Length: 93
Length: 544
Image (cartoon, rainbow over all chains, first blue to last red; front, side, top):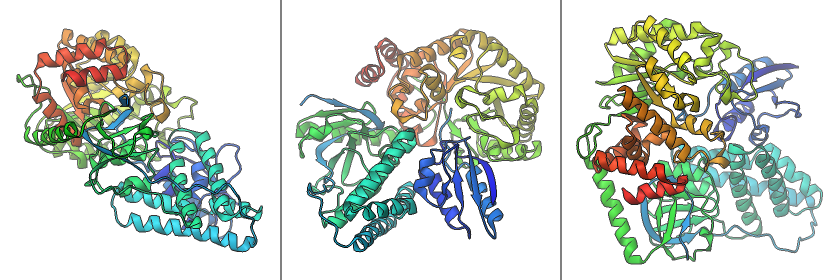
């Protein structure tokens, strides 16, 4: 099984729109990707509700895992999305 | 009916009759027995698919952020986790409508336990539940009222679907009993220019048709006569028209200049006609990178922004990231309190090369474009930090060095800081967070994060006073500089420039043009004398 640790790049975390983008990206992969944070059991990364329920904030580390053909490429694709800041720039002065 | 008060989240004044949202369907007390679990499971799945389809259809009728929220909610309706939970409850003997209700309640609890932004996603789930249950019971779909006249929409809370679909021509304003400053109501009302008040206790007790005046800045909701309502609407329309007429540089009625600068995050945000840039956020070059951007890459990006502005100064903020906004190439350790950790200028403690490279790139871009470039550091707490930063800026060949005032320690010691830097700029969002010890991402603490809090205003006044004594520029570049009333208060305190996003410049320019400097000083005194944030806002709103 391939696994990868990724630091969440979206500042406010995987809420609303960022969670939707992550779930959509996971659903588009040829293999099932699971996502976990902390000591909670891994959940289906293509489920937006499960991704939201992680409560992942920007800077948190999540672990994604998958098995089978193309698992590593699928994880790389999802890791790229997770590490990006998917929130529109918020005023932060 | 006494006057009501909530949190104003989208500015503007209007008045009209209130109408409440159609209530959600309620489940009968008697739970019917399930004869055919397989059929019940299919009915539940079909109802959720129906809801997803409806939301997708509605998303096609709108654009931008509204379409985004509807698409996200549609995804949630057909989510595999939710489908499994519903199927599990049907298998345990619950009828479809009850199974959906139970499964969603469980998920809402999970979101509520996480808090903040996540808790607000519970509104999406409630909307999915109400639509699915209405479909299963054959009850009318919950939704917006259609009274046939422009109205003030009143609701417990609005779902993303409701907010996305409301017609700005039919709705005068929105008032909700629940919801925070980051709720859909707040975001979409602002995008549509509708006055909005959230967290307004007692608003659901107003009978349909009651005429109220709504102030989206102060959060006041008061019952008025229909004649007064007409007058308020006319005055608000006149105010809007007047705002469009005032152009040119920011100045008070008696000609005291208050440059209105822009907060930008890249060349696309630059309006070439702006008076200048008061906050150029440079994070876009660094976030999500596994290696640091080179000096050459940075120079090109900065020159693009510098070249996009016609005239005026450009205040560059050096990298404001770190524990709160992770930078993979720095390999910083995770922290328990990122807002209080290694961020902003503090990164230079272990990685001085990041700052030196950035200043080198800024200096080269300034040379290449001939722009008037000022540089400031974020997250400065002491005069020693400010002094060391200013020395680096000058070593890079840049003439004007300043610091952000975001940490209360820096605000309290502003006199000392101004001995070593050329200017300061107050970041009210972080200054509020640190002064009030309230996480700015936590919607439940919105009342504490209010920039009208006396403690925050007193710090701003102190910094402005220190600037006047030292003869140095004191800017404000937080969200609050774009609040027309606070802009007057800051000007009265002696703040010399205001920096904000481009969309709010006309309102601030119009507010300044309608008041003399002496008026502003009087308003500042009123705000500082008020016992709490709502009283300060009210006192200034009434006197301006």
